Length: 144
Image (cartoon, rainbow, N blue to C red; front, side, top):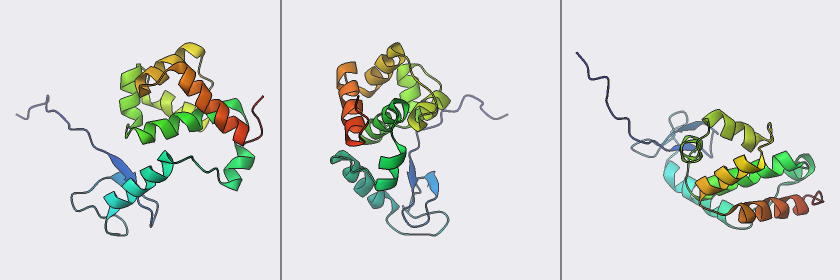
C-alpha cells in the first residue's frame, strides 16, 4: 500500500523567455519544450528587471487605466519581487489561489480588508501598497 500522506515539496514555476512556456524549474535548468539552456538565469534577470522602476510598455500604458488593474499589477510585481507564488501568497493571506489570480488580472475589486490581508502577506503596510498603486496609476494618467 502506498503512503497517502507524502509531503510534496514547494516547486517554483518559470516562463521560458525563448518559447514562453510556463513550467516548473527543471533539474538541468532547460526548457521542457525548446530545451533553451540556463532557464534559471533568465528568471533571475527577469526578477532584476522587475525590481527596478517598472517600465510600463506602451500597450499596457494604454490598456491599464482603471484602479482594479493598477492594484493587480502592483500585487503581481510585489509578489514576483519577493519570489512568492500565487499559492504561497494565498496561503499567507488566507485566500484561494484563484482569488489572487483574479485580483492580479484586474477581474475583481478587493475590499480594503482584503487589500490589508494581501499587503500583510507580502510583508508591507497597507499604506505602502496603496502608495505603489497610486504611483502606477499616475504613470498611466489615471491618478485621480
